[in-house]
Amino acid sequence: MKKVLIIEDNELNMKFIREVLRRRSYTVIEAYDGEDGVALALQALPDLILMDINMPHMGGVAALKKIKQMAPLQHTPVIALTAYAMEGDREKFINEGFIDYIAKPISIGILMETVERILK
Image (cartoon, rainbow, N blue to C red; front, side, top):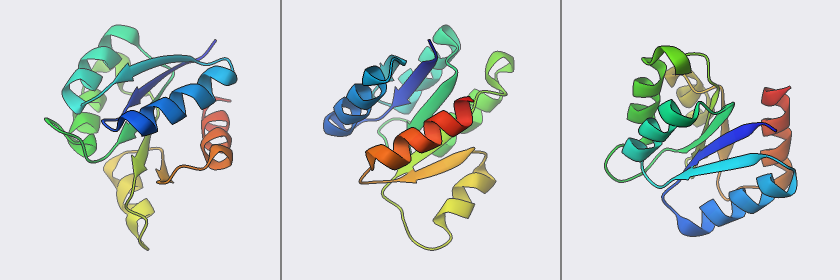
């Protein structure tokens, strides 16, 4: 079973993503802010990370930079989850180092297509 770390501070978004992934037999690990997410990523070594951009203590971009500096996590794909859905935002997040981008509100179809494509 593939292991997915969700780093998301919104309880409803976390619950939604957790349930969608668990129904498709993914192991789900959860963190509610960037600092905890970075620590948990290093401990759990997930196959994929879904990361909110705006979080308390440490935002998604800062957390991504820390994750990519850790040797065991350098090649772990990280998908940005964000309400920013303006033209150019996707490219901005890809340029920051995210492998992909999912706009909120999150669609089950887009979530699963993106996760499955990356984890193939």
